[in-house]
Image (tube, rainbow, N blue to C red; front, side, top):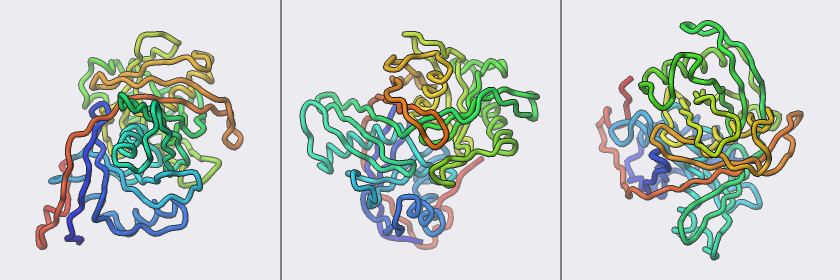
Length: 332
């Protein structure tokens, strides 16, 4: 077990934590970012648990590991970590990282807005930081609808109709009223139970693939919505339950990206129409379809998502030899 201190900067976006690792992490080997993701999962997973789990983290903790980019246009590259493993994209973390990169001098600030190119496991994400306000917008990798109106069998709810879309990660989308729930009013545990049943059903009944790499082809989570998908100037609410029943406090950047892809595919929004998305904390992201493109055989669209992140502090985490509990644990 590593005993050297690991130093971090702590941020949050819409209430969702972003623990950015700055010093003390071992070198992550691999030629490509997906190679590095595989290496970290195989060789350094004890450090993910050390930083994400109690007593230093909690069940819904989220973190970022900077790595050396292999994309020629990237300013920085990152891996994302959470309670279950290593995600392929994270919009709330990208929003925080854009501001962080400017504030730390990783990219020189240029008024009024500075571009920061962040290589994520899903690909290169272009991030734009408004210097005066710290507000950040990013343009996603190609987002697309993988499946529409698919029926899956669930344990408690019988057949449920889902849409599946990709926004840097794959999500199943279901209107919460199919379960008699309201994403703004229902208890969080009830929303988690419903979303987890959908995730389990999709994983066991639908094979998900991505044309670029097999490592991208898996269901990351389920997003329950308020069903308000037609264009409106009023915010639409959703809650994302991902990884091991982890609840995103933000509207979920990659989830919002995928949801815009669905709405665009269905003709519910037009290119360039801004929509507001609201989370369980009341935080809001705005998002819009930007450019039509393709991803393998799929018609796709890039999506611009904007929000703001805030700093909460800095940390230096240590491990004292013999502290088995301190290596990391979770209470289920």
